[in-house]
Image 1 (cartoon, rainbow, N blue to C red):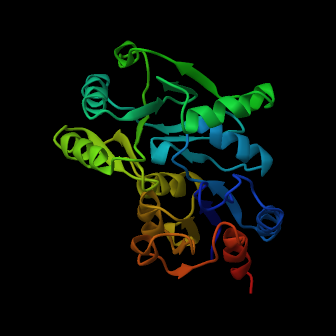
Image 2 (image 1 turned 180 degrees about the vertical axis):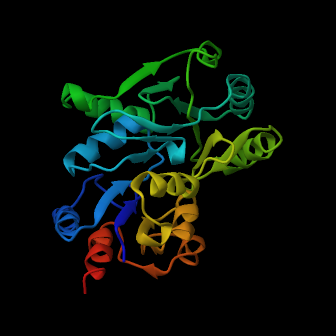
Length: 272
Protein backbone atom coordinates (compact mmCIF):
# COMPACT_ATOMS: atom_id res chain seq x y z
CA UNK A 1 0.00 0.00 0.00
CA UNK A 2 1.29 3.44 -0.89
CA UNK A 3 1.73 5.75 2.10
CA UNK A 4 3.67 8.64 0.54
CA UNK A 5 3.65 10.32 -2.87
CA UNK A 6 6.83 12.18 -3.85
CA UNK A 7 6.60 14.45 -6.88
CA UNK A 8 9.01 16.43 -8.98
CA UNK A 9 7.90 20.01 -9.63
CA UNK A 10 8.80 21.46 -13.05
CA UNK A 11 7.32 19.43 -15.89
CA UNK A 12 5.48 17.26 -13.37
CA UNK A 13 3.47 18.87 -10.56
CA UNK A 14 3.52 22.30 -12.23
CA UNK A 15 1.89 22.96 -15.58
CA UNK A 16 3.55 25.03 -18.30
CA UNK A 17 2.40 28.20 -16.52
CA UNK A 18 4.32 27.05 -13.42
CA UNK A 19 1.06 26.60 -11.51
CA UNK A 20 -0.58 23.73 -9.65
CA UNK A 21 -3.92 22.97 -11.28
CA UNK A 22 -7.09 22.83 -9.22
CA UNK A 23 -7.56 19.14 -10.07
CA UNK A 24 -4.07 18.34 -8.85
CA UNK A 25 -4.52 20.29 -5.64
CA UNK A 26 -7.83 18.52 -5.00
CA UNK A 27 -6.29 15.10 -5.67
CA UNK A 28 -3.50 15.79 -3.17
CA UNK A 29 -6.07 16.83 -0.55
CA UNK A 30 -8.11 13.70 -1.24
CA UNK A 31 -5.04 11.49 -0.88
CA UNK A 32 -4.38 12.98 2.54
CA UNK A 33 -7.93 12.17 3.66
CA UNK A 34 -7.18 8.59 2.61
CA UNK A 35 -4.01 8.50 4.70
CA UNK A 36 -1.52 9.06 1.88
CA UNK A 37 0.92 11.93 2.40
CA UNK A 38 2.48 14.09 -0.31
CA UNK A 39 5.78 15.93 -0.65
CA UNK A 40 8.20 17.39 -3.20
CA UNK A 41 11.50 16.25 -4.68
CA UNK A 42 12.92 19.00 -6.85
CA UNK A 43 16.08 20.34 -8.39
CA UNK A 44 15.00 23.78 -7.22
CA UNK A 45 16.50 25.53 -4.24
CA UNK A 46 14.69 24.95 -0.96
CA UNK A 47 13.15 28.41 -0.58
CA UNK A 48 11.52 28.11 -4.02
CA UNK A 49 10.08 24.67 -3.25
CA UNK A 50 8.81 25.89 0.12
CA UNK A 51 6.49 28.38 -1.62
CA UNK A 52 4.55 25.49 -3.15
CA UNK A 53 4.80 23.40 0.01
CA UNK A 54 2.95 26.16 1.83
CA UNK A 55 0.30 26.28 -0.90
CA UNK A 56 -0.32 22.54 -0.52
CA UNK A 57 0.03 22.44 3.28
CA UNK A 58 2.77 19.83 2.98
CA UNK A 59 3.92 18.50 6.34
CA UNK A 60 6.53 15.96 5.26
CA UNK A 61 10.16 17.02 4.60
CA UNK A 62 11.03 18.47 1.19
CA UNK A 63 13.82 17.13 -1.02
CA UNK A 64 15.55 20.11 -2.69
CA UNK A 65 18.58 20.66 -4.95
CA UNK A 66 18.23 17.13 -6.39
CA UNK A 67 18.71 15.62 -2.93
CA UNK A 68 21.52 17.80 -1.58
CA UNK A 69 19.07 19.10 1.05
CA UNK A 70 16.17 17.52 2.92
CA UNK A 71 14.36 19.96 5.15
CA UNK A 72 11.09 20.30 7.05
CA UNK A 73 9.47 23.55 5.99
CA UNK A 74 7.12 23.42 8.99
CA UNK A 75 9.99 23.65 11.49
CA UNK A 76 13.05 24.52 9.32
CA UNK A 77 14.75 21.39 10.68
CA UNK A 78 17.46 20.14 8.31
CA UNK A 79 17.44 16.34 8.06
CA UNK A 80 20.23 16.08 5.51
CA UNK A 81 22.57 18.47 3.77
CA UNK A 82 25.64 17.88 1.65
CA UNK A 83 27.37 20.85 0.06
CA UNK A 84 30.08 20.90 -2.59
CA UNK A 85 33.58 21.11 -1.13
CA UNK A 86 34.63 24.75 -1.48
CA UNK A 87 37.93 23.86 -3.18
CA UNK A 88 36.04 21.69 -5.66
CA UNK A 89 33.52 24.50 -6.20
CA UNK A 90 36.40 26.82 -7.09
CA UNK A 91 37.59 24.39 -9.79
CA UNK A 92 34.02 23.87 -10.96
CA UNK A 93 33.09 27.47 -11.63
CA UNK A 94 36.39 28.03 -13.47
CA UNK A 95 35.49 25.19 -15.86
CA UNK A 96 32.11 26.78 -16.54
CA UNK A 97 33.83 30.11 -17.17
CA UNK A 98 36.32 28.49 -19.53
CA UNK A 99 33.48 26.90 -21.50
CA UNK A 100 31.70 30.25 -21.82
CA UNK A 101 28.53 29.12 -20.08
CA UNK A 102 25.90 31.03 -18.15
CA UNK A 103 25.61 29.52 -14.67
CA UNK A 104 24.17 30.16 -11.24
CA UNK A 105 24.39 28.44 -7.90
CA UNK A 106 22.29 27.78 -4.81
CA UNK A 107 22.81 27.57 -1.11
CA UNK A 108 19.89 26.61 1.15
CA UNK A 109 18.20 29.96 0.72
CA UNK A 110 20.40 32.16 -1.48
CA UNK A 111 20.66 32.34 -5.26
CA UNK A 112 23.90 33.63 -6.80
CA UNK A 113 24.20 34.71 -10.43
CA UNK A 114 26.31 37.02 -12.59
CA UNK A 115 23.34 38.29 -14.56
CA UNK A 116 19.56 38.19 -14.38
CA UNK A 117 18.70 35.51 -16.90
CA UNK A 118 16.65 32.31 -17.07
CA UNK A 119 15.63 31.22 -13.54
CA UNK A 120 17.15 34.24 -11.83
CA UNK A 121 15.17 36.64 -14.03
CA UNK A 122 11.97 34.69 -13.36
CA UNK A 123 12.55 34.80 -9.59
CA UNK A 124 13.46 38.49 -9.78
CA UNK A 125 10.20 39.31 -11.55
CA UNK A 126 8.17 37.14 -9.15
CA UNK A 127 9.76 38.94 -6.20
CA UNK A 128 8.09 42.19 -7.30
CA UNK A 129 4.66 40.91 -6.29
CA UNK A 130 5.53 38.10 -3.86
CA UNK A 131 4.93 38.26 -0.13
CA UNK A 132 8.03 38.67 2.02
CA UNK A 133 7.82 34.98 2.93
CA UNK A 134 7.79 33.96 -0.74
CA UNK A 135 10.61 36.23 -1.94
CA UNK A 136 13.78 34.52 -3.20
CA UNK A 137 17.10 35.98 -2.01
CA UNK A 138 18.93 36.71 -5.28
CA UNK A 139 22.46 38.11 -5.26
CA UNK A 140 24.06 39.35 -8.48
CA UNK A 141 27.83 39.05 -8.11
CA UNK A 142 30.79 39.65 -10.42
CA UNK A 143 33.30 37.21 -8.98
CA UNK A 144 32.27 33.71 -7.93
CA UNK A 145 35.60 33.15 -6.19
CA UNK A 146 34.21 35.30 -3.38
CA UNK A 147 31.51 32.73 -2.60
CA UNK A 148 33.47 29.54 -3.29
CA UNK A 149 34.77 29.56 0.28
CA UNK A 150 34.13 27.65 3.50
CA UNK A 151 31.63 30.31 4.58
CA UNK A 152 29.05 29.28 1.96
CA UNK A 153 27.34 25.89 1.80
CA UNK A 154 27.03 25.58 -1.97
CA UNK A 155 24.52 22.85 -2.73
CA UNK A 156 24.25 23.05 -6.49
CA UNK A 157 25.48 24.74 -9.67
CA UNK A 158 23.37 24.96 -12.82
CA UNK A 159 24.86 25.74 -16.24
CA UNK A 160 22.51 26.66 -19.10
CA UNK A 161 23.16 26.97 -22.83
CA UNK A 162 20.44 27.34 -25.49
CA UNK A 163 22.36 27.78 -28.74
CA UNK A 164 25.59 25.79 -28.41
CA UNK A 165 24.99 22.38 -26.77
CA UNK A 166 28.60 21.47 -27.49
CA UNK A 167 29.61 23.87 -24.71
CA UNK A 168 27.63 21.80 -22.21
CA UNK A 169 29.18 18.59 -23.54
CA UNK A 170 32.65 20.07 -23.19
CA UNK A 171 31.93 21.20 -19.64
CA UNK A 172 30.52 17.80 -18.69
CA UNK A 173 33.62 16.04 -20.00
CA UNK A 174 35.90 18.38 -18.05
CA UNK A 175 33.83 18.15 -14.86
CA UNK A 176 33.83 14.34 -15.00
CA UNK A 177 37.58 14.55 -14.38
CA UNK A 178 37.05 16.45 -11.10
CA UNK A 179 36.57 14.21 -8.07
CA UNK A 180 33.70 14.78 -5.69
CA UNK A 181 30.98 15.85 -8.14
CA UNK A 182 27.66 14.41 -9.28
CA UNK A 183 26.33 15.52 -12.68
CA UNK A 184 22.70 15.48 -13.73
CA UNK A 185 20.21 17.18 -16.02
CA UNK A 186 16.67 18.52 -15.55
CA UNK A 187 16.19 19.98 -19.03
CA UNK A 188 17.73 19.53 -22.47
CA UNK A 189 19.67 22.79 -22.20
CA UNK A 190 21.18 22.47 -18.74
CA UNK A 191 23.79 20.73 -16.64
CA UNK A 192 23.30 20.38 -12.88
CA UNK A 193 26.26 19.82 -10.59
CA UNK A 194 26.08 18.67 -6.97
CA UNK A 195 28.38 16.93 -4.51
CA UNK A 196 29.11 13.26 -5.27
CA UNK A 197 26.41 10.65 -4.66
CA UNK A 198 23.67 13.28 -4.53
CA UNK A 199 20.47 12.15 -6.23
CA UNK A 200 16.75 12.17 -5.65
CA UNK A 201 16.91 8.39 -5.30
CA UNK A 202 19.41 8.50 -2.44
CA UNK A 203 17.40 11.28 -0.81
CA UNK A 204 14.28 9.12 -1.09
CA UNK A 205 16.01 6.43 1.00
CA UNK A 206 16.76 8.97 3.73
CA UNK A 207 13.21 10.33 3.58
CA UNK A 208 11.73 6.83 3.86
CA UNK A 209 13.70 6.18 7.04
CA UNK A 210 12.65 9.54 8.48
CA UNK A 211 8.99 8.76 7.74
CA UNK A 212 9.39 5.19 9.03
CA UNK A 213 8.10 3.65 5.82
CA UNK A 214 9.53 1.31 3.20
CA UNK A 215 10.54 2.44 -0.27
CA UNK A 216 7.90 0.02 -1.56
CA UNK A 217 5.29 2.25 0.11
CA UNK A 218 6.32 5.33 -1.91
CA UNK A 219 5.08 6.48 -5.30
CA UNK A 220 7.52 8.79 -7.11
CA UNK A 221 6.51 10.92 -10.10
CA UNK A 222 8.85 12.73 -12.51
CA UNK A 223 9.72 13.67 -16.07
CA UNK A 224 13.46 14.24 -16.44
CA UNK A 225 16.84 12.54 -16.13
CA UNK A 226 17.26 13.73 -12.54
CA UNK A 227 14.02 11.92 -11.61
CA UNK A 228 15.11 8.47 -12.81
CA UNK A 229 16.87 7.50 -9.58
CA UNK A 230 13.76 8.05 -7.45
CA UNK A 231 11.44 6.48 -10.03
CA UNK A 232 13.59 3.35 -9.82
CA UNK A 233 13.80 3.33 -6.00
CA UNK A 234 10.09 3.86 -5.35
CA UNK A 235 7.54 1.08 -5.05
CA UNK A 236 5.62 2.70 -7.90
CA UNK A 237 7.58 4.85 -10.32
CA UNK A 238 5.51 7.13 -12.54
CA UNK A 239 6.68 9.05 -15.60
CA UNK A 240 4.78 11.94 -17.12
CA UNK A 241 3.58 11.66 -20.72
CA UNK A 242 5.80 14.67 -21.49
CA UNK A 243 8.85 12.79 -20.19
CA UNK A 244 11.54 11.58 -22.56
CA UNK A 245 11.51 7.91 -23.54
CA UNK A 246 14.68 7.37 -21.52
CA UNK A 247 12.72 8.28 -18.39
CA UNK A 248 9.56 6.39 -19.30
CA UNK A 249 11.40 3.10 -19.71
CA UNK A 250 12.26 3.09 -15.98
CA UNK A 251 8.69 3.77 -14.83
CA UNK A 252 6.03 1.28 -13.76
CA UNK A 253 3.42 3.41 -15.46
CA UNK A 254 3.04 6.56 -17.55
CA UNK A 255 0.43 9.17 -16.67
CA UNK A 256 -0.85 12.16 -18.65
CA UNK A 257 1.28 15.26 -19.24
CA UNK A 258 1.82 18.08 -16.77
CA UNK A 259 -0.68 20.17 -18.75
CA UNK A 260 -3.30 17.40 -18.54
CA UNK A 261 -3.33 16.88 -14.75
CA UNK A 262 -1.00 13.90 -14.95
CA UNK A 263 -0.12 13.99 -11.25
CA UNK A 264 -3.80 14.16 -10.26
CA UNK A 265 -4.59 11.16 -12.47
CA UNK A 266 -1.69 9.14 -11.04
CA UNK A 267 -2.87 9.91 -7.51
CA UNK A 268 -6.52 9.06 -8.15
CA UNK A 269 -5.47 5.85 -9.88
CA UNK A 270 -4.27 4.62 -6.47
CA UNK A 271 -7.80 4.64 -5.14
CA UNK A 272 -9.60 2.86 -7.98
